[in-house]
Length: 490
Ligand SMILES: [Zn+2]
Image 1 (cartoon, rainbow, N blue to C red):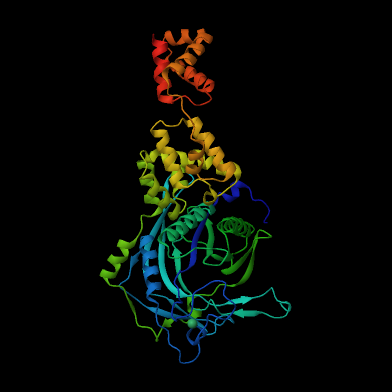
Image 2 (image 1 turned 180 degrees about the horizontal axis):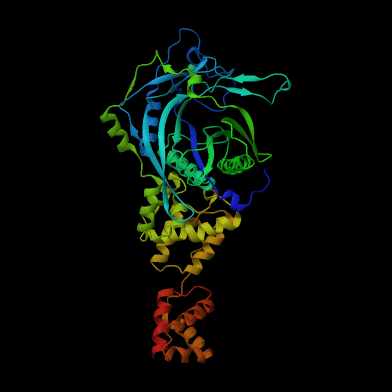
């Protein structure tokens, strides 16, 4: 780590951050050939002359990759070009047998988008998206895991030709936290559109960060450094934090920032210089002669637009209004599209959808949290929660009884309908039995009766609670309320 810089020094500078995100598309086959696009196959089994770059093999564009890339473009508010051009990006690397990557250069599929992120000040900030272009992935060099890894590198070319989109943000991001939020929102949108599994451990989503600093108020950007190979959003945040401080320290000590690529080392919590950064002209881009221009018609675009799901931000806003929830709860319910879909499908069948939301968040959520379980591990199904909500709503069980039943569900790992059927908790709905208990409680608490009669009506709750306890939670709540009020008023 650089020596800690004084806040007064740090605040002289403004960080400027842009992110480049590579996303593998969830197609069944590769971008330009029929090989399986599948993670985890035995090395070098999903390959053919096209993705191995053998002479004479010709690429054919995968229509599903265009579907997914277009959906992703629309979901991040980009304008999709009617005509985009594939280009060859030339460079040598052992895991790139063709010697070039098919990418898009000056005419990418989509441009000028944005996504919105919440800021620390509680406002919403729009981060521009410069472009989304399609390209193919390279293979993988395996540097360890073999007996002779100390002296040899192995190649797995299964990943060659995997369809990717690269999403490049504008240099609009100013803090490591904003970068974290941007990535979180972007991933969530991509997951909702189901174009990628965004699995960072498997490399389906990869992020490079361009970081520079400039004196506050300066117009020109500082020299930027690209931090590569960061495989979690937390690490991206940490790498950017480190890089900002490193650059300020260099500038403060009279040095200059070199344009370069740096690697994040998570174990040491620092970046290392990797190589001087390539410039676009180093790649000798030229239009791919083996592929025609990609044409996206207005009709196709309209069809894709109609396929877009309700996106996370919009869904949260609707859920907050519809179920009268706070933003935090709405976030919990919309954490994944599948979960939100299951919740809403179930809630709509209940007498009170709002009650389903509340039970799911408080009773189920609380028990899961206490046991350190994921939502998917809950013994209580959505249908079980709906049944519980309806029973409460129809006053067939008290909330105390419900809590007890949920406890049994979690103890025995059984769904609510099973437990309810077996235990069928009895309610005391006999007025005379309840009245006896109420009379006893009233007789035992003259002071509270006095308070009530002096106008403090909330004391009724005290009596309801006492009787409920005396009945071991079995008093019918509505009837109890009514009888308590009647007795106190008489
Ligand atoms: Zn192939």
